[in-house]
Length: 74
Image (cartoon, rainbow, N blue to C red; front, side):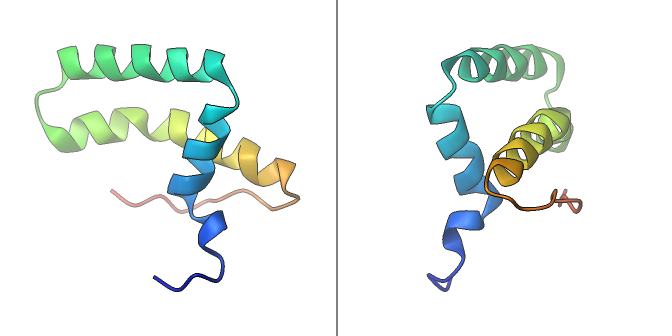
């Protein structure tokens, strides 16, 4: 992956934003536990996290003056 723009990768934005917001970490852990108990199929588990991840990433993007990410892969 090219180094230019890597700080805007949604995985890194998500990680860095959670690191500075402990309450969101607790919320994310609770969501993951709930989904893991409910979904045994990986794709369903991932889809269950999508809305939370998108919200955090778009909040992080907004704080950097960027527009929202609108395309999310399965």
